[in-house]
Image (cartoon, rainbow, N blue to C red):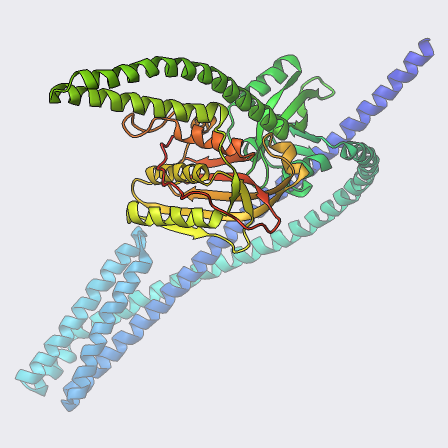
Length: 607
C-alpha cells in the first residue's frame, strides 16, 4: 500500500516538475524577447533622432551657403551698376536683395527655438541689413553726386569692415555646424555597430530558444493529435443525431456545431463556430436570459425557444441545456440540444383556433335563433301598427322601426352564415367572370390613388359553388384592402391552379390533398400585428371605427369558404401590407360552366 502511494507521489512530482520547466522556459523566452525589443526600440529612437539632426544640419549648412553666395552676387551686381550704369545690373541687384531676404526667412525657420542660434541670427540679420543700407546709399550717391563721391564711400574703412564681419559670422557658423554634424555621424555609426552586434547575439539566442521550443512543440503536437482523434470520434457520434447540438462558452461564442444544427439553421460549421450565439440565433430575445439564469443556478434547463435560421425564418425548438464545468469546477461551456417543433406548434394553434371558432359558431347559432324569435313578433306588430296608424308622423316612425328590424334580421343572417353556412344551389362556377366584375367595381368605385392589378391565367380551373356567395367573399377582401390603404397603394389579385401535397396538408389542419384554385388578394396597406391576426376571423371583432364595420365581413367570408370545402391563409406584416389566400376545391375536368343567376354586387362588411 505504501509503495503504491509513493509511486503515485513520484509521478505527481515529475508531472509538476515538467509543468514548472515549461513555464520557466516560456518565461525565459518572453524575457529575452522583451529585453531585445526594448534595446531595439532604444536604438531605433536614437538612430531616428540622429537622422533628423543630420537632415536638419544639412539644411542649415546649405541655407547658409546660399545666403553667402546670394550676398556676394548682390554686391557684385551693385558694383557693376555703379561702374557701368547698366539698368540690367540694377535689376539683378534688386532681385538679389529680395532673394537674400527670402533666404534669411528660411534660415530663421530652421533655427526654431534654439536660443544660441537665435542670438547669432539676430546679429547676422542686423549686419546684413546694415550692409544693404550701405549698398543703397552708394547707389544713391552714384545717381545724384557721381562716381567720385561713390568711390570715396566704397573705399572707406567702415564699408570694408561690415562685409568682413558678415563673412566671418557665416564662416564661423558653418564651421561650428559642420563639427556638430561630424560628431552626430560618428555617434550614429557607433549606435549602428552596437545594434549589429546585439542583433547577432539575439539571433543566436533565438536559435537556441527555437530548438528548445521545437522539442516542446513536438510533444504538444503529439498530445494534440491524440486529443483531436478523440474529439473527432465524438463529433462523428454527435453528427449522427438529427437534433441540433451546439456547445457555447460562457462568453456566448459557439464552440461546436453538429450536422443537425447545420441542417436545421442553414449555417455551415465554418460560418457558425466563433460567432456570438445570441446575435446569431436570437438577436436580443429576452427569453434567453431566463434560460441562462436557470442553467447557471441549477446546472440544466428545459423549455421552448424562438430562434432564427439563416434565411431569417423564425422557428420554435424544444431546447435542453446542460452546464459543462472544467476540471477545476469552474464554468466552462453550455451544451444545448434543440429539436424543432415549429410544425407541431402551428398545428396546435390551428386546432385551437378552429375549436374556438367552432365554439363561437355553436354559441352564436343559439343566440341568433333566440333573437330571431324576438324580432318576428316585433316586425309583425310594426306592420299591424302601420295599418292602424295612417297619419304621416306615425308612418314615418314605424317605417324607421321596420327598417331597423329588417337590418337586424339581415345581420343575424350573416351571423348564421358564419356559424353553420348557407345551403344554396351549387353550380359549376367559372372564376374569371367574377374577378372581372370585381375589377370593374374597383375601377368605378375605389379611389384613384389605389392601383388595381389582376393576373388570371386562361386555363384556370372551375369550382362547384354559389357564385353570389363567392362574389361576396372576394368583395369583403378587396374592401378590407381598400380600407387598409388610406393613402393609396397597390391592390393585387392573382388566381392560379395549385395542387395541395400531402406534406402541405400535414402542416395545415384545414387543407386536404387535391386540386385547388388559389385566389390571392394582396395590399400594400398598414398591415396587421400578430395579435390582430389571431382574432381577425372572430365575429364582431373589427379594427375599424364602429360606424365603418360590424366585424362580420371576414367571419362570414370564412364561413362561406369553409362551406365550399376550402380554407383561407393569412400573411401580414405591420407597415408592409396584408395577403389573403382563398383556396377553393377545383374541378379539373372540362365541364361547361353554367350560371343560373346574375351575380349580385355585394359590398363586404370588413373586419
